[in-house]
Image: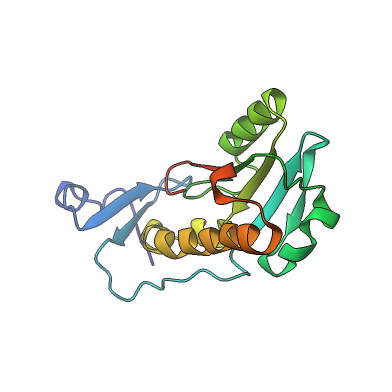
Length: 169
């Protein structure tokens, strides 16, 4: 986890060392993360990732779905299997309500008759950068498994899905 330093403690040698990521916090302190820390947890579970479904008929609030509810998405969300689907994945320190997600989702729904799924992995993305970065493959695999289940269980073909990611997304 990041260690906090005051501005007097952060040296040029520390800032220029590629082993560390130095970021300034809102209160003017500095967080230093060791990019090579082997103890960082790598994970992605249903409690870490939530999917929000939007359609042209429901562009504002979206329907919150966990992976275990996949078989019920048509009934719960209005998801249309015959439509193309856009999946939007946010980046580090973001969540489903991040402006970039809204911009992409809203632009797509204004111009196209599609489903949009916003994948929210903020419980991991809100952690320190190293944990989030090292979890990207597992988060991607989790989302990919969800999309494969859409194909296998609901017959929504993978070639009808486009994925847009921002930053670590």
